[in-house]
Length: 72
Image (cartoon, rainbow, N blue to C red; front, side, top):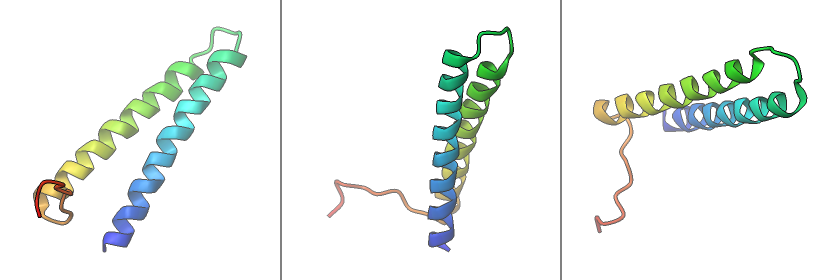
């Protein structure tokens, strides 16, 4: 089960990075008045918030445990 969660988190993080770079690409290359930059950055924010909320839900459900560096 944890392998599936790890793969899902990695895929979500990759989608966030792809959305970030597509927004940067549209910002540099797109000279028209299109909303592609706003749409790409909105997707990035939505994916980031969604990933954060899913991780919090998994922690509170006890499915995953956060790493505590102070615990021996």
